[in-house]
Length: 145
Length: 427
Image (tube, rainbow over all chains, first blue to last red; front, side, top):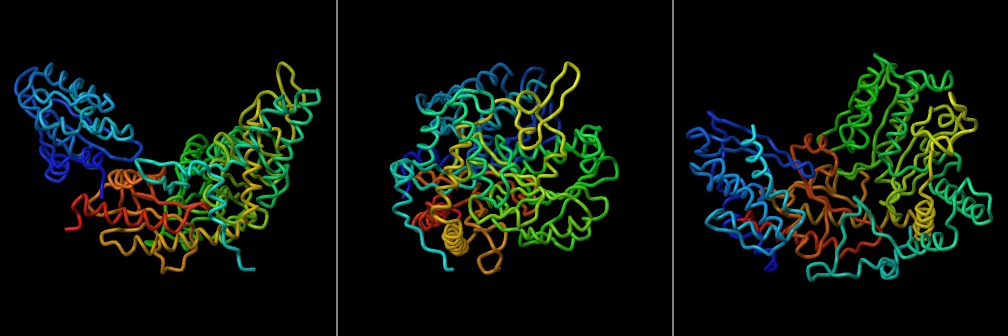
């Protein structure tokens, strides 16, 4: 009915996160915010970062609409930002970007990326990498502002 | 005369790509609204030209340059015949987008006084109005927004009925003495419906406004006679009608083209150049600065030979039956909403449908179809306003062409139905 590649792309954890979105709903008290758009499909995400101390991020909150890959990616991202230093978050973003650019060669570092490694299958689909990256780019941008 | 049916086996054999596999399945190409496949005959024509006639068209004085120039101009005449106009009313462009920008920038130049008295009718200033519709592709919207911003003119928009048809009452109210240009699409690239060109031409001409027709989705799919439609300008792209990328067509009525100030300037479009000023050639040369896309123009004329060989009325009829099959099939799937009128609305439309599957984003629908080797378009198809009008950010679009079969349409419809169970929205 559907190929193993497709099952690998849309792992159950991704379909679950696309429906039960973690971190959804923008909260106030943000130290930074970013709005990102994927111009080819009009998908968008707005992401706030909430500080716990100077240089530390307690959590993120987000809103937006998009495909299951970008939605699940934002949801998974909100799970792995948990009172981290901005350096740690920057490292996570770098690891995720490397995973997305790996063309299927990497499985992803689960210690760093948690359940977000389930998105590894996206790296084989060049047209979908932007979908998965959208919230991570928003986080990167929010930290810079 | 009843259109003949297509010899699909013979046609499909002309398109090598249609026999390849994608993701372990036969390739099903249902994205011709974005770009069409190219038959061997067109590729051969371009190669034959490049191998035997490459030389500087309209410049060289040697034998081959003369031959190439003749072939280039024959290609122009061929394109003119395809749409029922004269050869000197056809300007080569890169694509339809460039064609619309050529008109808009020509008017912009007229608005700052270029072109003198003959160009007066192209001048825009505060108080003048440019009219478009809510269904336009960005290519027939953004250049007019920019022209309005540069000249102080006002952009006005004809809205859509809930079923996607143009609001003709609104068109009649908006198009008035201030209107200078009415620009609209012949066939919507999202809704697939054929707009009533004659009605809009009548409204525009009654107030002396110019009509610009976006024929990108009609020229490939319907018999098109621009002369009898009475439009002032029209544009379309070669790559959507079996031709190569990089070549498009602008049609303009002769007296208009000869009065419109040029857009791109430089070599080959001049008569006399001094260090301070220049006189321009008549149309079409005045709009063809620099080295032209020669082999692409040759290939496009070959595409028109191919299309006319099959017969545009035959193609229209074939695609109309595929389109109805598509609407019927999609319409029977729960949770699928088609933008524009359904199969029973009796509105003329081409073989194209954009739709929303409740609970599944179009990217995910497209991914599921792609897994079965079925290529469709997902996103906003360069037409955000019409998506917004119908409450969608993105849709999945299935679009046909002469080489598609009923089985391919059925396979796509089945895949849409199966996507619902894969993503768990059928429960």
